[in-house]
Image (cartoon, rainbow, N blue to C red; front, side):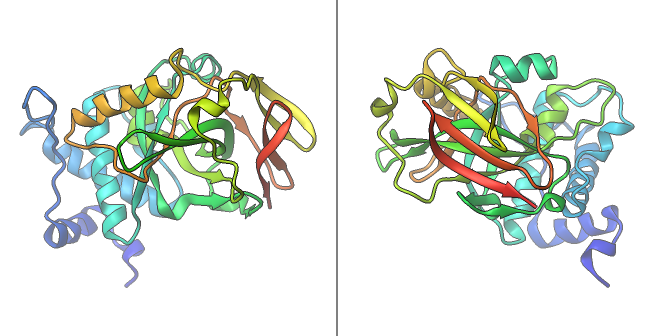
Length: 285
């Protein structure tokens, strides 16, 4: 029998036996985030989220649940699903900082920041053709990213196209649904040319824009936070530290964008420009 054909409850028992599944985490206060009463509920939710991920139907739980999942519990779910993905052969290659720019805050009706994980299997090179059916309601953002260097500081900065499964199922959008669904991130398209610069080299740059089929659909500043990439990284370090996680050399970090989230369709050609110069692109089929 194929693993996908197993019921979630049965599959989670197998996964727990094989991988010693733990759905609790600890914050800086040392308190257990998932208490005795909520732990079985979170384990069941992790199984369901993993099942949904494999079928590209994210977050079905939120279509029927009340607003009972806390933000801390949502992070516990995100972390455990990430462990299952890595155990299945994937790898975390960085993080995103999200829900901070004016475009998305207005669109979603809620404000972060939140963090989510980036996975090796979902990083694409500029110029690639993306299959629309590989995503759940594919949407994109133009965004600046940074690479963490050997000393732990920002080694380079460059524009990317962030990919999303643009699906919210709850009666209203919540940070808990966003976080449990890994920030609705579906990867990123990064430049395969030598366009990465030192952070200071972007100081004079003014406008980050998204062009679809030759038409500029969104434009704004490069950074969502007032302090730019440095502030985003500082916040991310602190938030990861609450859960015993840390940035590593080589990590890719999407630093947040002031632009909105834009759905795309088959046949679209997406480009991200800075001051009218193209840096990264993809096509949708």
